[in-house]
Length: 114
Image (cartoon, rainbow, N blue to C red):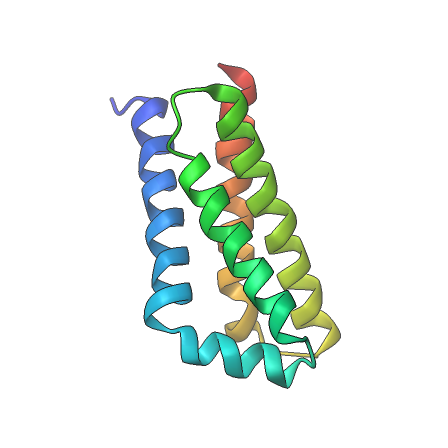
């Protein structure tokens, strides 16, 4: 049977890879999306720095740091989800924020349990 520790580690890797992919490989799309939503460049850059920082925190050996990282990603993903709702985006456009919210929430929950 697969241990929960391994599942959580896989979730941490998935979250990190997904966020790095979006904020480095698809950065042009991020820029266009924030512009379409009417958010300023400084806000986009702040969100990017926070997401990348929180992802790095997920890989710490200190549970408090992992808690901060997963909580931070959860809050940012809730913000992304509500932005998509406010803009009346399709489900396809906001499913990623919901998936990341679920992943970061599971990491947060597991970190509290151990």
